Amino acid sequence: MNTRVSHSPFGRALDGAERNRVLRNTYALLAISLIPTVLGAWFGVSTGITAAMGGGLSMILFLAVAFGFIFAIEKTKHSSAGVFVLLGFTFFMGLMMSRLIAFVLGYSNGAALIMMAFGSTAAVFFAMATLATVVKRDLSGLQKFLFVGVIVLLVGMVINMFVQSSTGMIVLSLVATAIFSAFMLVDIKRVIDGGETNYITATLAIYLDIVNVFQNLLMLFGIFGGED
Image 1: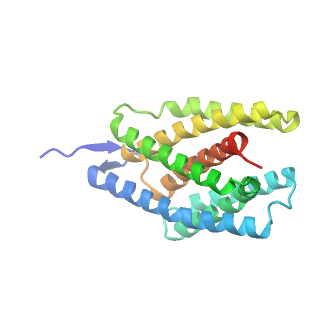
Image 2 (image 1 turned 90 degrees about the vertical axis):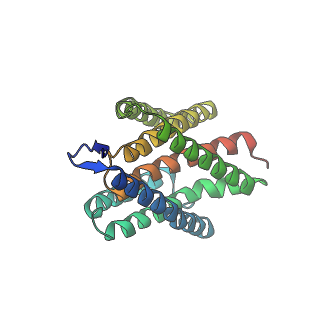
Image 3 (image 1 turned 45 degrees about the vertical axis):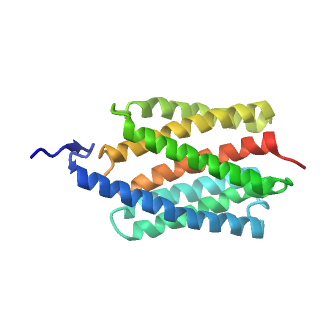
């Protein structure tokens, strides 16, 4: 009786049953993580706590807290505490998204735009998850090109903060949507192939892909479909 195994980058072999367990746990935790995200966004919109911050202060706060959370998740990923740290991070991400969500809700059709962005993000996720199960080739090499794309994207965002170009914002949002959709495919494929053995780390990677796709789609829908 033959058992197919895949080898993780850490040298440990995963059989099919273990790969499926990691994938199931990842999807389950990913679904649960949406709850604190929604709560964080609701709290931010209700209190206006992020709207009161300037763009520079908001960026500094986001980077400091986000990297702190990511460091803590990495340290606790092999224990149940890692789950709670991750959920705390997703609440924080919802809170930081509340500024954009509150802005879109200022449109008369804002709620509909948010639902469109959510539905479109879900469609992207299911498409990438399905594609990841069909593609047979190793996609790990694609990460290098995507990482370069993220660096270029960040440089473009910094430049556009000073230029304040609407066209630039549209282009950056389109590029970001494409890059993080591709990242989503690569991250899901890595779990399916057994390249990621920890479901908390896997959830974090895919969650960040989803959040970035959602935010950029929401910006695009707001630009093109917002009604005063």
